[in-house]
Length: 80
Image 1: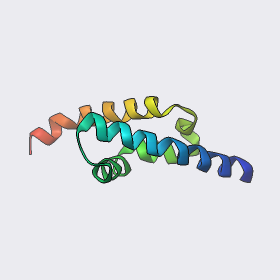
Image 2: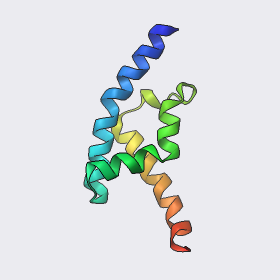
Image 3: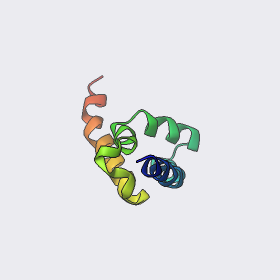
Image 4: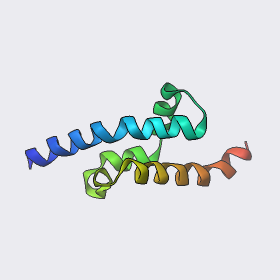
């Protein structure tokens, strides 16, 4: 069990920088802002929840999930 936890951490450590670069590029924000956006998202929470298996997906897939989440939040943000 401990080996899986370490392995999952290593996988996330390789995925997250690429996800952040994708967010930064697609959203036109700095990498610091992209990191902040990602870590405040439900997608990031799911990535860190081993039960979801999201850590086993590609960076592009996780990025797509993040963008879908943001698109769903956009109408709510426009009402503010």
